[in-house]
Image (cartoon, rainbow, N blue to C red; front, side, top):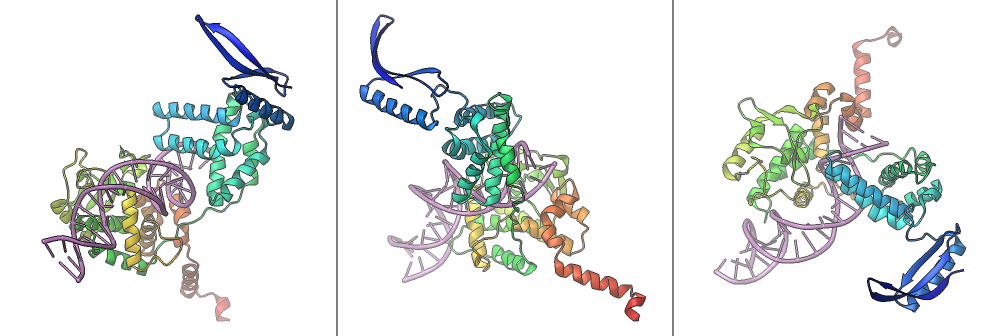
Length: 389
DNA sequence: CATTGGTCACCCTAGATTTA
DNA sequence: TAAATCTAGGGTGACCAATG
């Protein structure tokens, strides 16, 4: 089937020689590949013959394998990032998906031969690797973008990824746990105290982070994006205008609803006052929370400190620890529990529609016990003749 | 006052969650 | 659904608060 022969030629007056493997691929297309050593050429010959017999051979020059098309997709995505059409995070995410998951699992398959069952295998591999089913499914969803790209380039006409996704419907989205008011109170107490061995400045900062998240419902990126102009002690509000990305870029909010003014409790005004007086360092962008040297606060260190606080508050018993973001969820439910209408809460959290608030925070809003209590109160306030009878 | 162990800065990768 | 951010975690070296 395949043959190995020595080949000699002259290029620009220089004599060259190599061992050439010549063969016909599955479709009868003539191919050849050269090697310096006969041994390597023989090894390749054996590999090709075996692959052609198994029907798994893909010539190097082929451009329609999953790995070649996926890498082309990544280059295309990078262009979209450079043009400003998508963010850096999205580009890096897709790049990682392709290199870490797609290429190793599906890389050698030709796109036009890709079956829904291959994609389902991809999903199963990810789950076997330890990914949560919902996360694995969202990787398949990302891969669907590669498929769309491949279809536009004419590499396939079917929709194996879409077909596989239809099979993966109904995987529940995991919900993050939130705090009870007791737990939040304990957490706020330990955050306010000095942690042994910890630096005074860092403790003061974490205390502010916890308070801003628990009472104002702010996200981590929003807190890190606060500037001196964001704080208005006169009107007792925080103006949320920016978000600090993980790349230390200060970005405006995605939509107008992200822009909002949050009322500040007086104890937070005091804490901020102390912070500005004792710990604030001049910053070119007037960012309030920076390291003493003026660099971005490391997310890993916030996490580290957060875990220590949970430990001290006795809230680390579970194998699924509370996220920092759970404080934002707490803020929302605490506002609702204290009688603030959901529409107002949506405004304070920066949601553009209040059904987003309900979707994400429904677990706290629609507590079964609360529903029963309310139902009982309703009935008590409006006794029906049937009850009297 | 020297030691020391926890903390923090800075680096990284990758999975999970949020949200328009 | 698409696109973003957040969380989780690993590693290294400097540094600082508590301790004896």
